[in-house]
Image 1 (cartoon, rainbow, N blue to C red):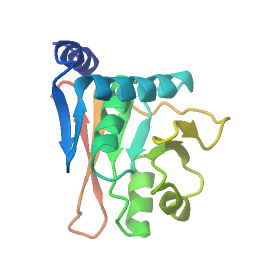
Image 2: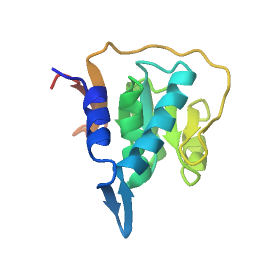
Image 3: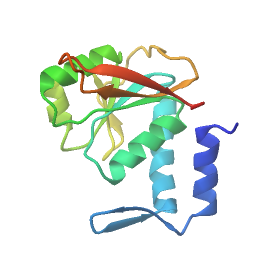
Image 4: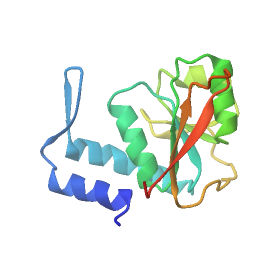
Length: 166
């Protein structure tokens, strides 16, 4: 079975000029998407961020898709977290998923700072990292690709781990 990274690259290669993302009234080609995904993926790899959980803390839209694909392409585990959730709930999710890194944008970086100042932020708008020196902790084996949270009937979010193999 081919892995996600291979499939993503193949789709980009075979569809360069086609529309990949339409959000509101904006259209982005696969070439646009590939360029930004590759930049994010290379950025994460340059900082040796590998097999770590990376929160996606940006609004739905083009940068959200770029973030998910960039995290997958860099061999990390993506964890989409709605930045509009109450900070207590977000803190719980970060703790449960052992999140050390979060992709933010210019609009969500201050929101995350108010939740947890220790999370290393990667700004998707500028591709800058909030701390230059840190120890990367590998948390997952190669089969985990994402973590989603349920609403939690007890009030505490419950993590669901998804794998590359289905």
